[in-house]
Image (tube, rainbow, N blue to C red; front, side, top):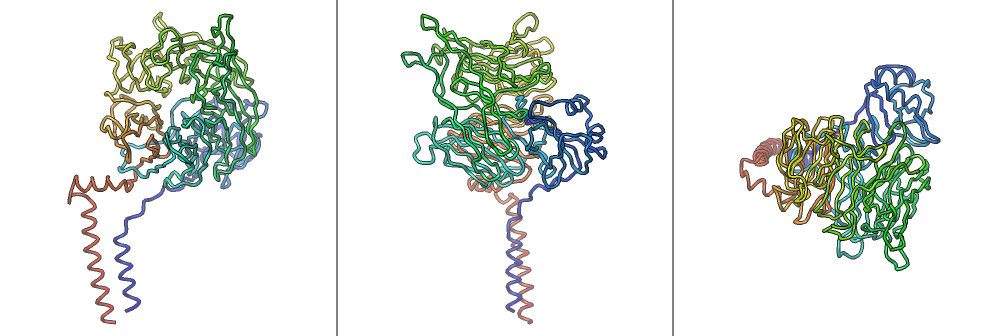
Amino acid sequence: MRKVLPIAILSILLLTMVPMIPVDGVVSSDDVLVDFGNGQYQWYENKGGSTFISVLESSVDDPNIIKDIKTTKTADCGWHCYQWDGRWVDKGIDLNTSCSGPIAFGYYPNGFAPVSTPEYPTSWTTLSGSSSSTNVSVSHGQKEPKMPVEWYNTYTTGFVDSGLVVAGNMLYHTTGGVYGATGGDEDAWVYALDRFTGGIVWKYHGIKGAGYEVTTPVIVGDYLIVTFTCGDVICFDRFTGEIKDKIEVKIDPPTNSSGNVIWDGRVFQTGGTTPVYDSGRIYFGTSHGLVVCLKLSSEGKMSIDWEYEPPCEEDPSGNYIGTRGCFYFHAPTIAKIDGKRMLFIGSYEGFVYALNADDGKEVWVKRVIDMRDDNRTAPGTPGSAASTSLSPDGSHLLVGCTDGALFSLEGFLIALDPKTGETLQVDGKDWKLSALFTSPVVTDSGFYTYVSPLSSGSKKFMKVDGSEIDATTAVYKFDWDGKVIWKSRDYQMIKGALTLDADGILYGTDYSAGAFWPTGGGLTAWDSSNGEEIWRVLLSPYSEDSYSMVPPTVVDGRIYTGNDFGAVYCLSNIQGEGTEEERVLALQTVGFAHWSWYLTEIVVVLSIIIFIILYRRTINV
């Protein structure tokens, strides 16, 4: 009897337990990875071969990529061959080396390897997905997500305003401090999470800078690089959180003899902008008005490769005549233009700077916005040249401009010639759309963006068929002439960039808080072919001021996002437990029709039957 009763009790407990949530299976294949060393990568089916060059030529269907891998190299960065052995093993640069199993080609310096692996094939290592600011993921998202969200994590240490970067089984982000808080809740924090559970793997407690942190970390090999508003730039071991190196950038802009900042634009005491990694270098701007290029050694040590310092001058009357200005959190954009690696970045002085990314030499500088005489939100300042994005063919540099305020009253999107900085022309007029635009999602056929019309901006946009369409608060697809291909229904406000997945689904996070649902607090998916809404869900938990500027990150069927509630959410095809309020609401809404009541009833009946059977056996014993 002593042996059988515990079995009866155990059987009942097993029946009444909540089923465990399944975890994604391990991906295993002999596929070929091509990692371009800038956040972009592509997997190809391995079609056979005994050497790296034979596999490359049989498997990769793009002759330009094959040519690039065969020929491209800089002073200390080139295409390396890797073979999988539980990790990427660097086999050198000789393409005639023999190989077997999963292999990779990666454009890196010695000592670095791709972060995408056969085990975890998808990564999102930098804001916008790559140094060229595409906002396109090669991964699959969700057509039918389950609610409540698979998991969420909330913090007391401030807003989640950074983008969310992912490599392997880990997700990284910062929190930005709580206004008016004391102690650790007002400081800078970095978190590394298990991306399948939301559990904290490690965290870093930094010092308070400006009181908010909005830059997005960048993943480089085994390292995570974060810029902080106190001026620190820290390289972490991304697996353990150990600090490998720390440097400091200035946050004091140049002043005149009266102690006033020389330039006209707004000044943010925020250190470095969001960094990007490209071809063996880390790039960012600073609030001090410099563009910085860092080398990163295989041991995680950082050193300055070059700095670009725009001129900063006044005329005899005290008027500013230089081109130097504050760089806020906007990341640089890097791409090859006519074979030359170029860097583009905009400032709060209203200038766009085009530099040679290899040596920092200036190619061209152009002021794209100048509102010093009529800036209603920040009188006397020229405005901001914010986002910079390149068309895939390198013909259009899109620049989003605003008056420089959090809630702007003026703004527009313009297209420049990346080679010269000259404004492109369409139908004999400057390529310019007057409204506010999120950082574009760029594709061969056009770009996607959320548009906020302004009282002084465009009332209508031209369509590709020659007709006009009302400018309203909606998601749009434009062609590269700036003409509307389609427009979604209206949505109240989106400020973070949209993200496009491999299935052609667009995702966007509402700026407005969940307390305003259904007009706020949502995550929405659209069909990128026509703008039709596929699904829209409320992100919970939330608060009355849980605003969001976080672009969704799409990795292996999961969508990650965050907001000012200090929350990170994971949405997938796995239904999470949700909050207590959500569970109560579900039961109140459907009553005894809810699936849990049926499950409970079945479990109870089976438990009673099993208990009776086992109890009778114990009596007979």
